[in-house]
Image (tube, rainbow, N blue to C red; front, side, top):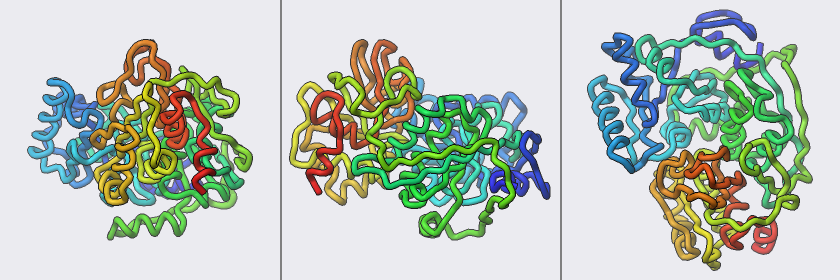
Length: 420
């Protein structure tokens, strides 16, 4: 069996499970974000009286943080009341940050667990050897009532990545390249396992980016086998028992792909499809009105650090706005302590409260008709960040910073090499 199958077997009380089989699995953590008040409504509509396992539920108010409208404030108020009424253990309010960052930081993500959330990018937690997946409001309400949910055991695709990336090329470039080659539907209701020497050498932050964007290939979940690096991170956050599963040597993958990224250049996903990807050298250097560094794919300390490396002592182009949003309060604090925030403000950046920000086109930097934006977020379809007439380029934090500096799509490598 694959490690993912062993996770689902453990959670469903079966000795063995196989791809295609339907199982009912106990959920180790269910997360609800502030887009989904419908979860609470569905819970009540389905006759829910008491949350089955309030110690295995968290609410994260991250998409509208702080609330930009009366409706979002009303929804958040209702969620806080539900959390208090039900004795739910975890509430990450508007001061905490993006769910996929705050949950690992809080020590509620661990190898071998089943984590279900009302957010498609819950695949992120495969970086820790967890089975993480996103669901809708009714499914999440079912978990609140029963503590369980049904799953079809997914087939697993193996993506091996080797080679030492060039300076200025990061996990975001690698995963954009892979999506560009394999397409947005290669893994529909399948799992993606990432492996290879490049993955082994990646930081935990970078592994989270890889796993996060597995859903942009349609994946149900993703997986990286926990190693010493994973365990050092987990043990710094958690003091509890858990089980690490490994894949049997005779397991047969649905498909296997190999990438060598030694010669990969910074990548750009062009408007309006995440799989329309090309190297920075081959993309028109269009003028850009806004650069955004943040979200669950680009708002971690390493992302802010590389932006500072490029922007320190310089000033962004006067025709371009730079919005920086740390992924969590913890990231924000570290960035302040290291002096990164001061450097970014001096360079002309606007710093906003930890959260999802303009990634979903709700607030903190939405786009006007006709505007061009580079973003470290994960999606670039029309209307994602505001006007349907705006154009969105998905890039790495380094490319976003270089672009803010030049006012047009720019290659970050020259700035990074210049500093070294």
